Image (tube, rainbow, N blue to C red):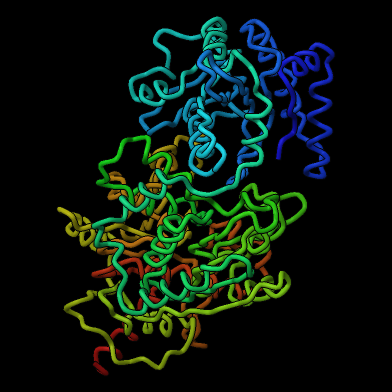
Length: 631
């Protein structure tokens, strides 16, 4: 989608005549069927006035090309401003410009992340130069016109309201590499910015370049496919075993011909290797030259598996950044062109969302149904799913829903199942025991599991549980404390940005710990400070550790009389997780039990559990003793 395209001279006239914002707004309404937000219109009106002065004073040729609000085809991201033209050597170039109205920013110790005042409050934001660079890299990697017509790309950021400070937070050493790749221009840098544009596109003839960019086929570049292959090469963690290999080859066979719409559902419980298969599928399809995205709704899961995937690679830092462009959340596909992607690989598909209500959208999701979005946007869609890991009312990624939507889109449905257990030391009996004990499903499995391979214990004191986990955290062994959302989570404005407040409190045992840090929650699972914090379902789902200590809060109780587990609506603190379920106790109980099964199956070598409800603690012990007797 392009909201405005013209020559440089026409752009200047449109700004001079005060018609540029009206033209962009009209195109926005035609493309999206709605009006832009008032803040977005103000940004256009303000920033484009500055850009017009830059373009005019840079004295670039009148026939340079201008694109405004160009949607990058493989994402929902829109580039603020692109100017194209030839340099003095006659080379075809274009420059991506990220425009910001910021007047202040703060540095962080996180890679390419800064703090800026946006939307009425301070927010974590990507560095403006990183944002511009990432857009450039996405186009370089996926647009065949840029690859085949020798079009050269450049990027920069322009903060026209921002007076550079001494020292300047956005220019500190931690940002030096990205600023070197993509220069940043401040309020008083007009002359430098003008010279930059003049150098790269000043000789004009830019409209043909824009046409090629707009009409280039979307396909991964040779450099990108080689890099992806190098990341996986020699990494034993991603070796496929037995039925994982069968599932992998089945998916590849079904994905060879993209002229037929297909939906592939890969079912598997915790520890069956869904993510190993999904990542390998993504790798191979990219090597085969297909337009592919790896989609994961949960940001913590997505970011941790990405960091683990690229850990230890010897590629340049920029190569790591370009690899990240292949990973996406699930909110961006609602306005994607039909069948735009060859393949979308969706891991943790049970966390896909639907539009919640007219006045509250799920996680800023603008569409109606993410399953529909993904099937509509791709020729082949692969969903890795476990119905028993649905944890919120607006989690709609079920096998039944995927089949329903696929039928509506005339997509052929294929099902693949992963059953062999590779987590919990292969203790399939433990997973079955969890299902029965948490009353998720009756498995009839009472044969137990090899206690020497997988250590499961019910602990009577949360302090002892914590000591177990602390002792396990040494060397390469990973261990984490996890808990259900049965305690409030103090917000950041109350001084709880980095886990400063001990929210998880069990007073009768003099026990207290903080929830995971808000600042680093997406990477909490692999951050050292995570050892002293308690993770929740949203920071651990889909991930694995060697050992986990799980505290089951007062949100889950055991009714001795009826011998049933029941969830407590008052004690369950996840507002979104219980919305609309106050009078639906069975559904709430099912979701809470799913959460605890997910938490308790994160351990590869062991799991230790403490229950706040004494009756539930006794129930777990009874069930464990029963297994020991049968074993």
